[in-house]
Amino acid sequence: MSQVSYIPGFDRKPISFAQKLASSEAFKALFKEGMGLVETSAAYLDGPGRVEAKALPRMEALAYASESMRLTTRLMQVASWLLLQRAVNEGEMTQAQAAAEKHRVKLSRQELAADAVTFARLPTALQDLCRHSLRLQARVLHLDELLYRPKDKAVVAERPAAIDAQLERLRAAFAPRV
Image 1 (tube, rainbow, N blue to C red):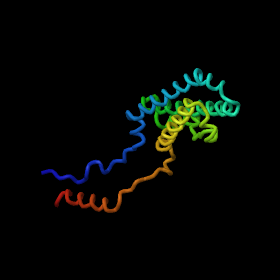
Image 2 (tube, one colour; image 1 turned 30 degrees about the vertical axis):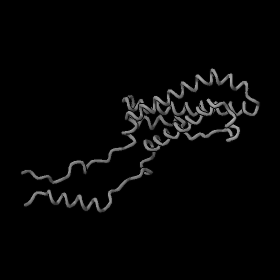
Image 3 (cartoon, helix red, strand yellow; image 1 turned 90 degrees about the vertical axis):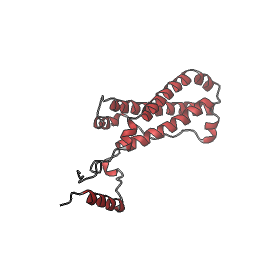
Image 4 (cartoon, helix red, strand yellow; image 1 turned 180 degrees about the vertical axis):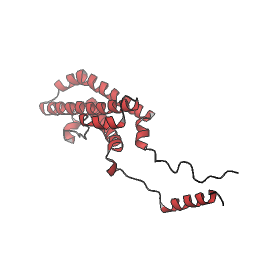
């Protein structure tokens, strides 16, 4: 009967949830959603949105212009980040290369420009696109923080002492007897 002197898997580094997520089907869905939102927004702003903007009173027209610029900027930031991460996932660059390139992707939280009352008077389609882009931006920012935050700021989960004690008992139980 062979005896095991260690428990397999306990001597390895923990798996990064963020890296698994960034290369999963969930990331592919996020990528598809982001690129789809870019296309939908561009089609709206170049078509029906242009017509709707011309019919707005001056105050709302200014808010429309401001929100459409922020929407475009927000989506370009998100799309750039998604493309960069997809390049990592497809092996076109390493995670370290992507981290070095991130200075070109100015990913930052960008809220609405208009106050709530003025925003509510904007065309519903623009409101929906802005809200969707804010939710997408929040998800991308969260994933970015998990993937690229400095290691000294990373949260390190330590095993509680009770688990270490249990592991030590298991090691002792399976240790070769002399």
